[in-house]
Image 1 (tube, helix red, strand yellow):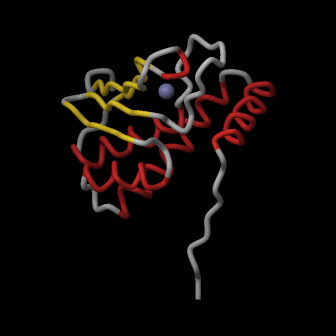
Image 2 (cartoon, rainbow, N blue to C red; image 1 turned 135 degrees about the horizontal axis):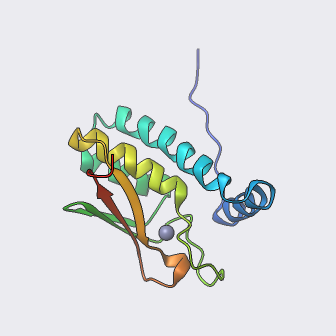
Length: 137
Ligand SMILES: [Zn+2]
């Protein structure tokens, strides 16, 4: 019998892991975190049968954020697990979430889109805001 198993990372541990990866491989680590998020987003899409509301609730239940609202081609996210206030960056930091949302958007809409994080709590915004651009691909 196979039992589903998983690990949990605490927010502080995610920050340490990200800092470690960036110290070794600089910006390339962002692409790997994005790809990691896509793997998790694809799992969520399978489990939730591509239902947008169900997928976003699962992200919240798993601890990715405290609230996610989908409006038009945007996702408005509160308290991303990957956002760290006052960490001195001027770049968005939610690369895994961006990957997960990319898969979830594609599953729900049937359209592939490039996902940009245009606002991030790590850079001083009161939310993280993701935009989907179907024209880029
Ligand atoms: Zn963010």
